[in-house]
Image (cartoon, rainbow, N blue to C red):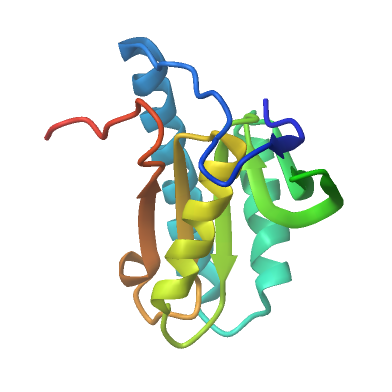
Length: 157
């Protein structure tokens, strides 16, 4: 589960537990389910809606599959004694471990993936998904982001 995050120095990151093979496989299965729901949503509705609409529809689809989903999860961060109760909000937190960041823009910018990577690093989450529902083809708007500070590595295909 993602809890509040605290840092005492710029270079320190929260402890990240080592994922064993079974945990990695479950995480990959979770990611596949999320992408599948996103594809079905985009296929049914197409591009052009607000991010908040896609967020609500995707959360509902994931809950229908039995997954625990939090929307707009506020995360507190403390840095050098300065605490911010809501330093950022996670669009979707699935099963307490996988972050999904949603966009509905013409084209993703490199800063969108950097934003997700920062969220992953600050929370210690190993994997995140960035969806852009503004793309004409959903597959062009899907990006996996791996926390390079975690022990998680994508499976070899």
